[in-house]
Amino acid sequence: MKIIEAAEKLFADRGIDGVALREIAAAAGQGNNTAVQYHFGTKEALVYAIFDYRTEMFEPLRAAMLDRAEEAGLLGDARTLLEIMCLPHLTISDENGRHPYSAFLAQYLTRTRAEGIPHPYDDPEVPVPALRRVRRLIVERVNYVPPVELRLRVGLCKLMFLNMLMRRDSGFPHFDQGITLDALVDDTMVQMTVALTAPYNHRHAPLFADMIKAD
Image (cartoon, rainbow, N blue to C red):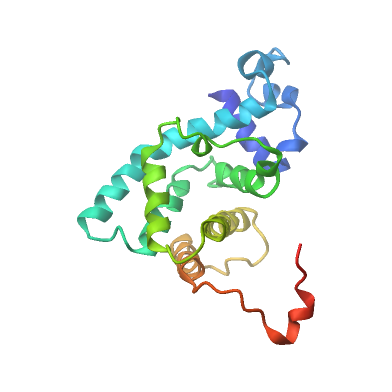
């Protein structure tokens, strides 16, 4: 666990590609510089182990949130589903109140995922029923959006939440202007809900259509 938590913090601060395995071993208090290789083999396997560790932590919390939402009749409510997906991240913070797992996940989603390092959710054999259920309910709620575009929407909504936490944690001058974390989370969730449930179409702004280039 020490290696996993040390790696998570270093990856959050410097990016997955910017950290050597020997640095992780040292940060975890391991006397042997090859301790990470011994326990995990490769950096890719260590990244997966971080996801496995945190996803397992989130599962009972998400399951309880799903139960509460079901009792309240809100399993079809977009904001409620986004909260179940994202709010568990608030439960993981370091001694300074920062959220290293959220920063690590944002690094992964924007840089490393495209390199082929999987997340446990990608493997249908991995038992993450609460996460799979909330993702399925989101698909049902926004079923008018095609699957590929919907995955993009969900990913961008998740990044909106993670980046809000990263920016707040960074101590960016005057970022919060005294706004509480509760207020920041609430406003971000409002924006995410609007983004997720926006109508689907392919119309471009006529004035700037020339700036939108097809791949």
